[in-house]
Image (cartoon, rainbow, N blue to C red):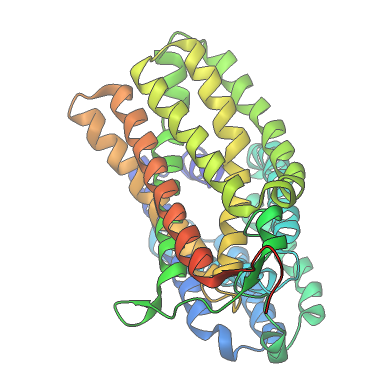
Length: 386
């Protein structure tokens, strides 16, 4: 998205405000597509739905290329975001039903990291060669090619696949697995409609992405403010991709060793502590340490957030809402950080905000762990059962 925003400004002479409007409309389409997928997940034929969503997004991206006017471009970007949101939400919903969701989500996010690295290398070259139209055409071509995967997806009967037990081994520690027998998760709901554990998980996802949005929007400016040259800041940001890839590749091993909940809570606690310490000691050294911890924990936390949702809601409907929660929070995070800067709190205030929202997310997951696991576990006597 940042590359498209820059391309619209440089290639089609859009103002910063107009480029921002296009981004907002794209995001609105993403939120709509993911919400629709969650609402319809129990009745979808995934082959037709994903194939149609890919086709819609591809055609809208293709239509963006010849139209430079803001109104038509916004219409087509909404359609492109709608199809993309539906496709991404469908992938999360389907992977939630996989027998080893941590492995599935690790592979997904690793592919996202590699794709983002490729985009950062190729899309600027396309923009220099032929402007934003070349970027939209390239996205359309990739989406059309992805339609070949749609016939391989399951039909409606995928939802009938047996879900993992409520106290799935991947959510608790291996030692607890050997002593516990799964029972039934209490059927409490939020406002009488949304099951409480998935609702809490989605709230925690949103809080974590307020952290990402507030910190990431000003990461470059913070590095410069703390005395690091802009060239070195860019190098540090690029080097973080390798830490992200390391997190993806090690997540499954860590999850099986310690359990999803402990790994997730540990990563959130580490990141929250680092952000808060950086807020109290805003130095160049702490910026480097904080950036490294963030890059290492970011995808690690993403994987275990999705894995936890797959356990508390095996249907995949809650996982389909993750893009909506992320998108809304990514929009709110920079706004909240900007408000703090406008009030004169400086980057210290931004760091303390980011650390606080991460700590709140960790607290919520602690509640989910206790709510979803402890009431569902019946410990066997040491000498055996009756």
